[in-house]
Length: 174
Image 1 (tube, rainbow, N blue to C red):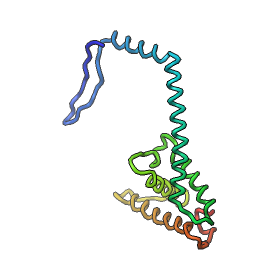
Image 2 (cartoon, rainbow, N blue to C red; image 1 turned 180 degrees about the horizontal axis):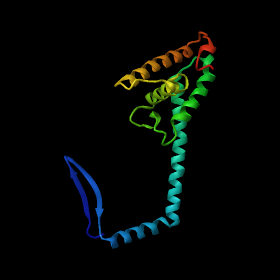
Image 3 (cartoon, rainbow, N blue to C red; image 1 turned 90 degrees about the vertical axis):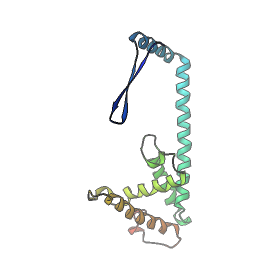
Image 4 (cartoon, rainbow, N blue to C red; image 1 turned 135 degrees about the horizontal axis):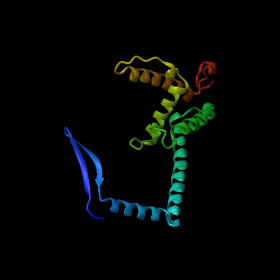
C-alpha cells in the first residue's frame, strides 16, 4: 500500500483523529480497486443477500417483540382483543430500524424492552404528555414521566383483572 501517516491532534488531554494521509496515487489506486470490486455481480449478489437476511431478521424480531409485549400486558381473557391490537401498535411503533426507541437496544432483555415500550407508547397515546408544559428544572421531566408511568401501570392493571370498569373513562378502551 505504501507509506501512510495517521494524523492525530492533541487538544488538552484528548486525541482527535484527523485521518490518514497517503500519496494521491495510492488513494486513486485503492478507490479504483474498490470501484471495480463493487461493480461485480458477486458483490451485488452479496449485498442483496445481506438485505434479505436483515429484512428476515427484522420480521422475526417484530413478531418476537409483539409477543413479548403481549406477555407483558397479560390482560384477562375479556380484554384479549385489546391486548393483541395494542401489542401490534406498540411493536409497529417501536421496532423499525432507526426508530431510536428502546425496542432497538440489545443491552436489556426483551421483556424489559417490551415493558418500557408499552409505558412509552401509553405516555404519548393515553396521556397529555406531548402537550404538557414541564419546568426546565433538573429532574422535573423524569418526575413527570415517573408519575405518568404509574398511571399507565394502573390502567394496565385494570385490564389484567376480570372485573369490569368504565370503558368511557378508560383511555385504552376509547
